[in-house]
Image (cartoon, rainbow, N blue to C red):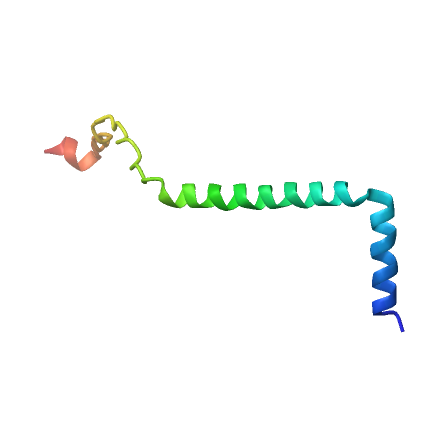
Length: 79
């Protein structure tokens, strides 16, 4: 009914063995294991690496912008 039973799995495994051969499958599994081992080692190296703080940013000291002087009004000129 759409599922894989034990006889189906055995036939499938035999077909894969005939196509690829026993040596090729073991070689692929060995490469797969090496890849996983390398990945785990890389993850551990990343965790053990000391964290260095970012370099201090150089900030330029700029004076704050100066607001323009208010324009004289007619009441200021009368005084």
